[in-house]
Image 1: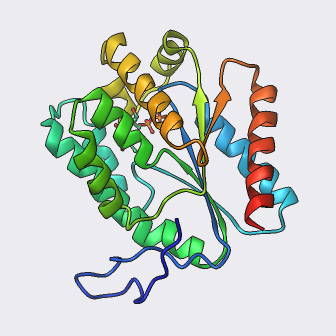
Image 2: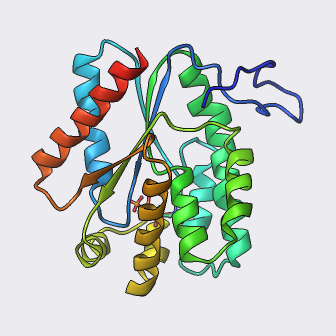
Amino acid sequence: MRIERSESVAISPFAGNTSPVRNGGVFITFEGIEGCGKSTQAARLAAHLKNTSGREVVTTREPGGTDATKQIRALLADPKADWNPRAELLLFLADRTEHVARVIGPALDRGAIVLCDRYADSTTAYQGYGRGHDLERLHELNAWASLSTVPDLTLWIDCDIATGVQRAAKLTGGPGDRFEKEPLDFHRKVHNGFKQLAAEHPDRIVRIDGNADIDAVSAAIRTAVEAKLAELS
Ligand code: TYD
């Protein structure tokens, strides 16, 4: 979806109230359960696009994609924090608004290809399907918090739930830790969330088989991205 911006993201309290103009910018997000390998794949795709596309490529992630929101990431990661589910949701949304207003939006305005490790679908999958927040309300909040900035392409790296959770348990130091501690049933719900989202948005979300070997996953991602770039050009 492309909505023309009528005012710039500037100093007013309503700054960032409109979505990026884009100027040919392309917004690609990576989604999936813990340990599905999306961060590795995002880095691989970034290197490939930097070599081949001749365009500016911006890599970023949520939560914590701006200097200021690294503190939100730390708040979410704090193992001592037992966030009320609404407060947790609002922290993720605050993180997103800053991220779109200061990083994603300006990069799209410059015409860059933006690769983002997690975005609004994670909110729907984790806070909606996982935590049980009302999905319609989340849909509205997501649109509002993201300044109606919708990815052109979402790569859902779909991997086996137990494998992903086990793989993620080896990594430490992020908000993921709080989710990694959740029972397998939580991750099943999150996985189901991504599956439902993919069924609802077949033009935007491409399922990538994350159980395949790492090079095969990268190749499938490149094919999906090249098709989308060709479609948008
Ligand atoms: P991170 O350490 O970056 O994990 P990962 O490598 O799996 O992305 O932590 C991000 C965690 O935050 C992850 O468990 C998913 C969760 N999350 C939400 O619950 N809602 C959201 O909107 C986002 C962006 C992330």
